[in-house]
Image 1 (cartoon, rainbow, N blue to C red):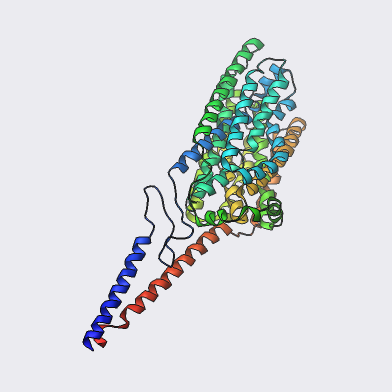
Image 2 (tube, rainbow, N blue to C red):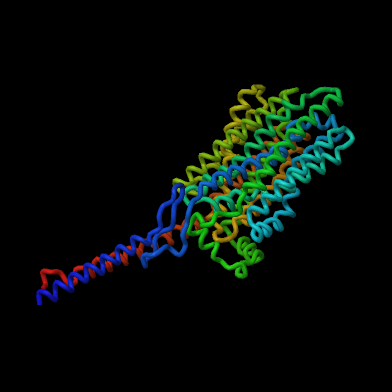
Length: 499
């Protein structure tokens, strides 16, 4: 009896020892610079393995750079609008359209571009974006003559068309390449490039193109500015051709792994679009986001006109004020992205930043005409920190509210709303400034920011992407815990004490 019991005990120890060793061998190993999926309850590799690649930082930085090159050209004309009015012999309203063409082009083309993003992926979209941007810059090089305004408008149209392939990409790129603990930060970096481009657009044109009376000399300065822009755009186009990658081999998160496993024949762009339009929290976000960003577009486009009214011959100063707005917003974007990754408090953060944008706009409107430029710098910086810092918040909140729908579609709808309100606000505020003054024009924007703040308060916070990642992780951990418990209770079934 003792020999039989000892033999059974030895077999039990051998069996469970081999089982545990087998499980250990099947666990995924950590690669430098990456994280892998959890083990399955059967002891093997998870059926949805995940990994983070170091290349993701190269991809998002390259995207930020070509986004910078494009957004710089959005404000390139508007910040020295009085100079281009004189050079091309057109009206101020016509030069305003050099900025508004970015908004107008986006509205009809975003839907086919979003469909193309879903069908062809990130690399094709990046190639088209940088190719169009490069072509537009070289067309502008040929337009640096007073009688060639239609040519410069064509170049600006090409660049505005390229923007359609860029503006909604940060959230999609972040989801495809980055882990759940860094996706908001990655989206902020993507938006960071766009903001930095606008900042350079405020700063550089007034320096490169001084307000001189000789049209020949003015043409020379404008041509130099266009050549620099074209050189940078061409270099970035070449980098995208050789470096930009479609997606990592393994997905970065469980949510992205599940999204990859949806068969193409089961995905319908039209059905996805309809589901988004039936998502009430997302509809509220679309409108409130459009109101906020539309105000920013109007403020940026008309900044030169507003500053010149109160501070004559201060084109360079107007550019520096615009730079202050955007630099402060870039800091706000990065802080907000980092904060979201740590806290996941999407609604609370979005509402707080929106409300502070309203407060900042009220203070800016009240102090613009006091005659003290240092005060304008301070109030403009505070306004920019919150108003521009709101941009990545809207993108990431939209992805959370609409998962598992395409990030490109949700971002596209947000940006479409922003372009519509941007055109309306720019035209309306411009007319109000001409007829009544800058204070009344800025109060006009304050009213709509108040409406947007109230709407944001009513958005129901349904964080679908975070819930999916959490539930998937809990399910795997629960199955693993159950398996380990089962092994533990089986081992002592034939202890030596019972022999």
